[in-house]
Image 1 (tube, rainbow, N blue to C red):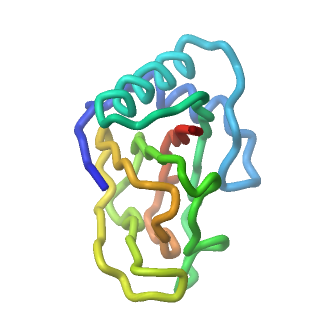
Image 2 (tube, rainbow, N blue to C red; image 1 turned 180 degrees about the vertical axis):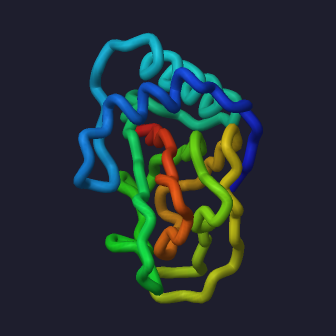
Length: 151
């Protein structure tokens, strides 16, 4: 796992807000807008710099709505497919009480690391690492762009 600071890009936040229609927490992005292509290019640069081999990068918008519940957000903890790929999460909007990203030592394992989301920060993790986010209690949406390097 690695955390890097790409800085905050307001155009990427506006893109994510405009692209996401509501509903599902994660939505694949496939358009040819400068914002998505710029995010894909920055992701490719980061993956290449880390020595990650890939033939394709899939990009996504992820929005976690405020939720007064407790425990894991729906769908967590999980891993990403393909298991030999690498994932990247770039935080765009987190608010004051954003749900942290938890790294686990297995599907039902204990939390071994906790990452506080910060707008402009990027987290890179292997797809086979279990991770999760608990219910987001902030007042505004927690918004991020995601890239997955497919070998």
